[in-house]
Amino acid sequence: MLCSPQAPANLPDGIEHRKIAPLNYHEYSWFMMFALWRVIETEFALIVQDDGWVLDAANWSDDFLQYDYIGPMIHVGRVDSEAGTRWLTHYTWNHELDKPGQTVMPVLNSGFCLRSQRMMRALVDHPGIKVVILPLDTVSGDTLKMDWTNGAPNKDVQLSAILRPELEAVGVRFAPVDVCLRFGIEHAGYIHKGFDMMSLFGHHCRWRRLISIDPPTVHYRTTQSEVKRAFREMDIVKMLEQRGYRIRFNPE
Image (cartoon, rainbow, N blue to C red):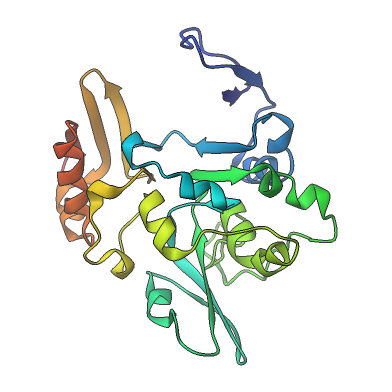
């Protein structure tokens, strides 16, 4: 199913178009949190934005259907303890896993994710659970650019971290770290040390764009030198090449 204001002229057979109003960046988040259930009739939906796709259907597992929300873990995570809540970035939340007295909630990317109807309807069926936009961290520059370290206005931060305790209290099940690792990847961090990239089901990353399927070609929206500096990104490149993709980079 393709949700967009207009159907493309070359929409392949087998893809249903559902017309929706044009959305800006934040309106898209609200649509996914409050209105997605109106266009999905199945028990689960695999959400795929235009910078993600299934890498290997053979890596699908029916175990994924035990959960209401699964997505690749991003670098931001929430850590709760008696001392309060901390938001950690660059996958440093990984070092807090399994420490006594702490609960770690990595943000689960929603650009490539699996959601159940229970998840899609959660904020409708439980109106007492309110979206909370935390105070922003900085306002900078002549344009007064606003910044939240944790990305608080975004749907994935809201659903899988800010509102997670309340959603779990009404029965929503979030996939644990080991399942999310197999399900997909955005960027790699310490949590991916030693992880077999060939075992991935899918991925989502604004760096990587599928620009052709004949031949299959991935365009990195950055330079090769920057990709080489990123942790394990060249292992992802090698995985894509092993799967038959051609790789292009931006000029240095």
